[in-house]
Length: 340
Ligand SMILES: [Zn+2]
Image (cartoon, rainbow, N blue to C red; front, side, top):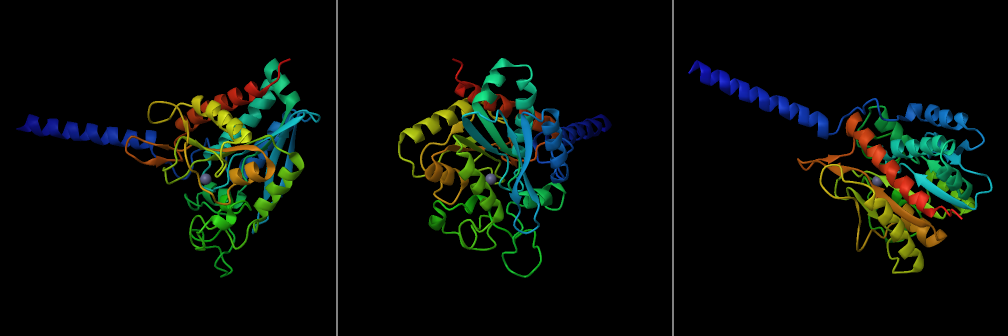
């Protein structure tokens, strides 16, 4: 009898230990662990990259956030006379921080490889990259400083009570672009997807549109990692695009990227979502339809074996995810290089 109860206790202990280790391996970690770039050290990270190669990489401020006037940083990387331009936005939604790390790591890789790798030399003679790690510094600040894990919108005082209601205030920056804005039915100011009173009402969106109008981007990639989990590990193309030549080329780029990234928690690679995508005022619809940019969205978050959406994984998983997306970006862009 005594032996039996010791055995039971041992089994119970083992189950508890394995549950605890599962939770740390595959779940969300909040406040964000040390591997994540935070709002408060983003400038330092970007400055280190630009100052390591000032002739190739310049740190820019493309505008300021709507309420707190926080700077929106970009790194411009490549030869001044490169004929083509590409845009990578790491973050529109405050809680979707994986793309911040991916985009900054890509900037670092461009600069580092340029020094030693002839393919990258060629790439940066043909492309100038604009890398905007966070287009939503207000949401990023709230999430990365440990105030609220799932702050998606910016901090615009949508209910007009002159204070920040961190869970409800704000505008979804990826619903505030002017193409298809009018088709978005969600007008509830408390909705996490609230599109704003008017298209381009937000300074963040004014800033990126102003940049896009001067840079004529050939390719634009938007990194997301939705907390809902419903869109995980897929790429999304512009809506209502039919099968124009531009759409076919955009889809080919997205497929190259998707097939280069293995899923985190299940087998197979990322896929390009087939069929309808949202006709709302989001970035890919604006860049594609208004500017003729090959624009697509990458959903980086994953669903773990327990069906949880994981968008703030631990450092080990974070590093794995960043490395995979760097390989996909490298593959996609080196394929564009004209080696003649
Ligand atoms: Zn998002």
